[in-house]
Amino acid sequence: MRAALVVANWKMHGTVVEARALAAQVRDGLKRPRGIEVVLCPPFTALAAVAEALAGSAIGLGAQNCHWETSGAFTGEVSPAMLAEHGCRLVILGHSERRQQFQETDAQINLKVRAAFAHGLTPLLCVGESAQERSQGLTFNIVEGQLRAGLAGLSPEALGRCLVAYEPVWAIGTGVNATPAQASEVHGYLRGLLSELASKEIAQFIRILYGGSVKPENAGALLREPEIDGALVGGASLQAQTFLGIVKKAAFRGGNPKE
Ligand code: PEP
Image 1 (cartoon, protein in one colour):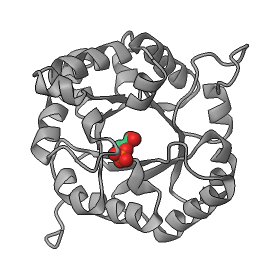
Image 2 (cartoon, helix red, strand yellow; image 1 turned 30 degrees about the vertical axis):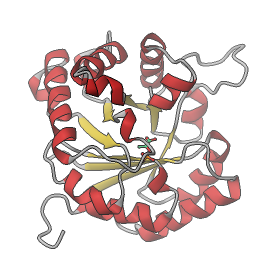
Image 3 (spheres, helix red, strand yellow; image 1 turned 90 degrees about the vertical axis):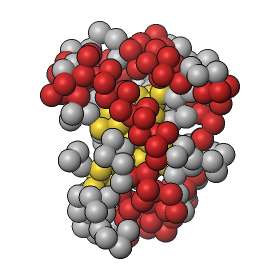
């Protein structure tokens, strides 16, 4: 079984003081995480403070976006080298909020994925369909296009080190999650595509997370699906106890009878 991974996407929330406090609460609530990996992705401004709070713990640091160039005249952007310098190990790329609100294209996302690798960061590529696309029966076409374009040109070895998140746009921040069956169907489809792009063996190692209104109440059912390897958590990651509730479900997904 692939080790479960839970990633917190704090989005544009939290001052440095608030971020440091939240990271410390998560750290203290997860003294010895077993069978689970956890990564916190605060806003850029809080990376240093959160890195400090997490130092010496098993919790990783990640970022929510990056540019594809290492440096240059790109006002307002942050490079993957800068993230690596802060101790980030992962970067979320192609989140639907960036695709929709900042017009990020698949081609740009692909450049970012490659740049992340070049600086030792693991890209977490997000894919997902809108409500309208789902109702038109286009879910598989949309996620396939985003996956193929986002990972274009990567070697099988690099593909094996990618993370993917299926995040249906209609489930993000709405309180309406995909059902375990809906998510599992898409995850299975994505793994089939990854087998084609890399190999069947490599695809078995790639973790595919689900994101979209994950909460402690629905995490157990979602994460018990064999195809769901973890969660990308937005709103519910902003409260330590709620986030820790999800992490606990992920850690026991292998079959704690009480879960
Ligand atoms: C997200 O933004 O990646 C996300 C999954 O948000 P939420 O958990 O709030 O739906």
